[in-house]
Length: 125
Length: 185
Image (cartoon, rainbow over all chains, first blue to last red; front, side, top):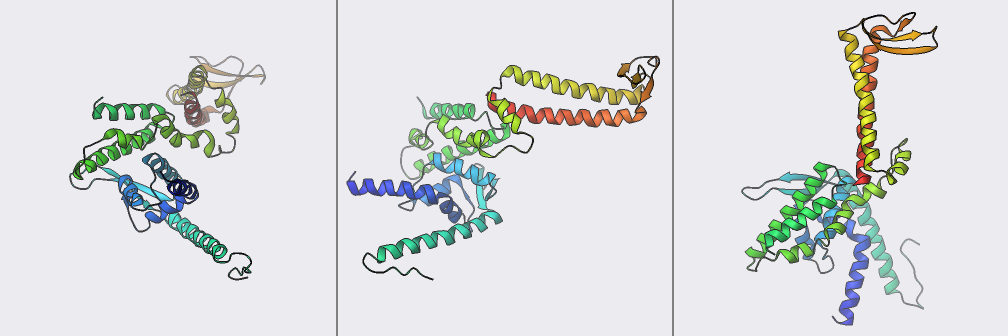
């Protein structure tokens, strides 16, 4: 693993710690998915490759917090699967976290785009 | 070790470490994880690969660590409801003896009260609460005869009162035992 790849991995782990709940809620926005589908969806993004060991206990916590609901469903001859979807409370939390996330990105971007000695003029101030 | 054995052992271990959860909750976790593993193996086969249960199980980590994430909220998560704080201290030192003693005492008292309540309806003159010794003591009797030198208290009200208190004690005992069970396993 190159030094850059190592740095990327560490960065991804740190970022995921703070954003995983937002990521899961966003993944379930207007979607109803079972665990493996959700995991595959996340794995299709470079920075969101979480493990089964992280996903399932988190889903259990989100369900206890009533941010998602779960329902066993069987489709055709397939084995029954536990499908997750956002609750109304989950949708509200997703909206709040999305706004906060966008604010953070904007703030970081402002800092990156304004290296010293340029004066910083954050939006709205 | 065959793939089936690997999966079986993993689920068995997981089940053991999930025993702090209520049985239906633990069974649901096992059912979901088993479904995931079988789906993932099928997916590996469908995409032309060789099924590799070990690589899938590795994604869950050690069964104990994985299970701990499901049960940790029971130990440190949601604060106990009002009036239950004492149980948080008691359960740290809870033993099986305490668990069974608590069950015996709680359900014993509950059964006793319910028997009195029901018995009063069946044999009203034989069961009662009596104020004896000029009100200095209260006696509960199962007797063919009225307790000597005494006045009966409550009358037929004894029946619903005893049954309601008995059922209440049984429900409370069940709640306390659940909390104790979570800490002794």
